[in-house]
Image 1 (cartoon, one colour):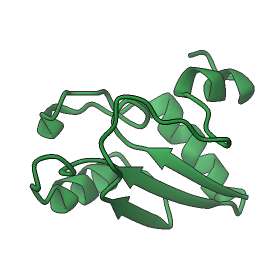
Image 2: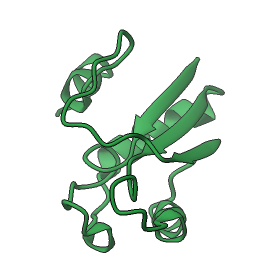
Image 3: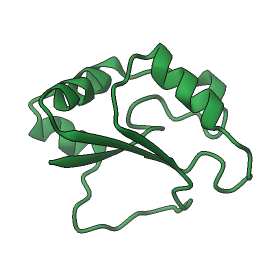
Length: 103
């Protein structure tokens, strides 16, 4: 199975663009790492820099290393939106409940 996770508000706290201040959400990171270890493909997708044009890739990669997130590919450039509608999307709380985690 291929999983695609957002970063801000999913793997770490949402900081409204102050990405240096993001704190990891280790309960989610632990489950993402388990999914990776189970042999599934883990993709990360973020809108960091989509509005400002700032290159947040170096900081993002460093944070993911520091937080020990295992993944196959990091995609920058997710379009900025107020609401994403997708036939395969789950919000974090729904996904955590589905995985037997406490949201």
